[in-house]
Image (tube, rainbow, N blue to C red; front, side, top):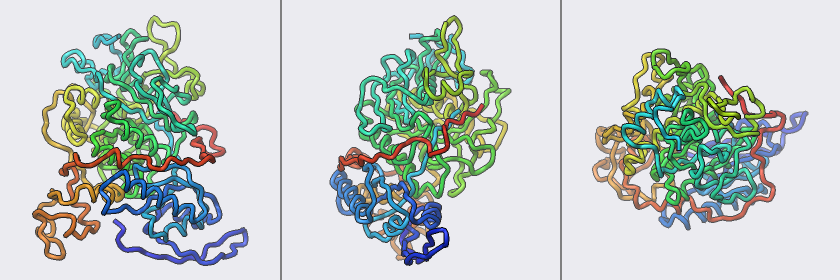
Amino acid sequence: MRWLAVTITVAVLVGTAGTPIEARAFDATKIDASFLTEVLAAPTADFDVIVRSVPSDSDKHADRATARRIEAAAKSVTKQGGSLKHALAIVGAVSARLKGVQVLKLTRDNDVDYVAKDQQLRAQFDPALDSAKAQTPGILEVNAPQVWSQLGVTGQGVGVAIVDSGVYPHPDLAGRIVASIDFTTASPTVSSTSTGDPGGHGTHVAGLVAGDGTLSGGAYTGVAPRANIINVRVIDATGSSNVSTILRGLQWVLANRNAYNIRVVNMSLGATPTGSYKSDFMATAAEVLNFAGVTVVVSAGNTGPLAGTVTTPATDPYVVTVGALDDNGTSLPFDDLMTVFSSRGRTVFDNLSKPDLVAPGRKMISLRSPGSELDTLFPDRQVVATGALTANYYRLSGTSMAAPVVTGVIALMVERNPALLPAQIKKRLKSSATALTFGTPFDRGAGLVNAYKAVSSVDPGREFAPDRVSDAFAKDMRKFIEGQPFVWRDLTYHGGVDSAGTSWEGVTWENVSWDAVTWENVTWEGFTWEGVTWEGVTWEAVTWQSTDQQSTGAQSGTGTSWDPVD
């Protein structure tokens, strides 16, 4: 936590001659360090940012508190002459555009909690329900068909949110794309039919979760072939997005999770982390979903094989981070190995062990989105099912393909036991994984996901994250859990007392000095979250949108961000 403000005064240079302008004071604790360097290097340039306002500890009415915070952040931006874009209530922030000098001034505003760059992201990829017909090696190797045939579980009725480039209305998903919304448009509206997938990535991901093999005679199926898909489009046709667009998609998922029984979110996307997850807005949003009962699955990234290459938000300890295994085109484990591209841990800023586990992710066959960007760029990856006349399937590689395999397993787990919490799901996934003899825990995590063992598991334990929640989550939730008893990770912490001699037994928020070390020791999963009005936390109290929308496409000159691996 940032309890001591540090004020730094610098002479900012502009122009080719390095002419100094007046000194600008800024608070370095309120801005991402890498972004600060970028702003200082170009103080007159325009930057797309996310501005979070200071939370209130006093107002327990989440909708009112959120409205005030959004308004406060908006006023701070306009006071500096910036242009507003969107309300991002899930993290108590707004997205906006400001010049570098305005960003520096913003950090000295008492109503501003943190400023970060609205970073560009990109996708990371590369009733035929007869278990005997399934042919995809990766689906067979994780024992999904055994779950269908022996346990009678197919993911039926479980809502899976695909936060991606969209989902094409493929016959293998017929009747099960229950809602679609597109945040790459100026005015997102919910549709009961698919809004399509110009990129092609999200369709492939959705198929690995819930495809039922209709057009392949059951050969090419997903892991949970009767699960429902909620299509949340946040990535454009070129494979690009930004943090604020992702956040808008996630807060919509949170607000609508009960309407569509959304129990798991798949995020096959990521960005290079610029700092700790504790100050990362996407990590905060993922944690809010987690504690609201929605498991978040994230691909580890495709920047391996070196250590410290896991992308954000996969670096957050509360999400399920998935690396990619190469099954070598067989359903037998003897020839498996880690893919070269799969990102490895430990995480670069927080030294956390990631990924959590792995799943097949090389040359995975799933659904094709005809005419999409991927389909056009790489026609050689089209797959024609046996006996078919046209290519209805597509082959891709990447941790983007591994993540939805695990997402599908979670849908199976939830159908069998709807009462499971995200922490329990993560514990069962890891404890039931098939041990691997190659690589290190920072390559493969707990091992290869095993659908049959995970769904059959009766493990009552929970996965207690190895580190604390993000700063933003801790600050926002403080007022909701005030007075609850605490569970400490280290039961002998400071000999049982704090620096003021206060015993940890029965401690409440009023008598705790919440320094950074104290936050580290709180076991957040131990709290009773039922009293939190999650809809209020995510309610979009401000309905304005800028008419000058930022494109969520690739940055100028980059052409396309689709960068497939094989």
